[in-house]
Amino acid sequence: RRLGPPSRAAILAGLGAVERAVAAVVVEGAVSVDGIAAATGLPVATILGALSLLESRGLGGAGDGRYFPVGRLASAAPR
Image 1: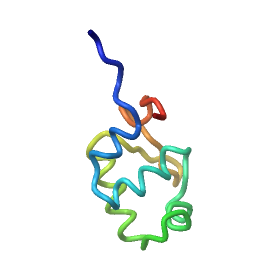
Image 2: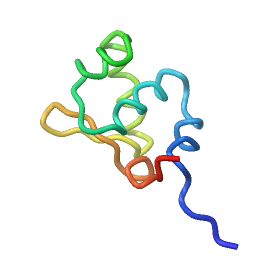
Image 3: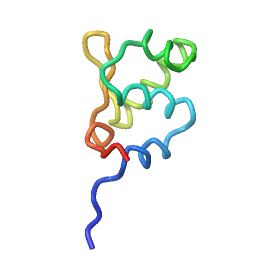
């Protein structure tokens, strides 16, 4: 039996609490650091660290001052 791709929830569950909170905002669409800060209440330095980790894991990308999901996170089913 062949399984489909992992769900978004499964991918997020494999992250630490801070990275999970940041990724949960990023998967909703391209967003700025300020937008992530407003949604999570996290300090900018913490967000930047989490974004770096997401990028290094191939789950996040950046362009024009906005962050967006890539790789498995971008293609994952919402549930």
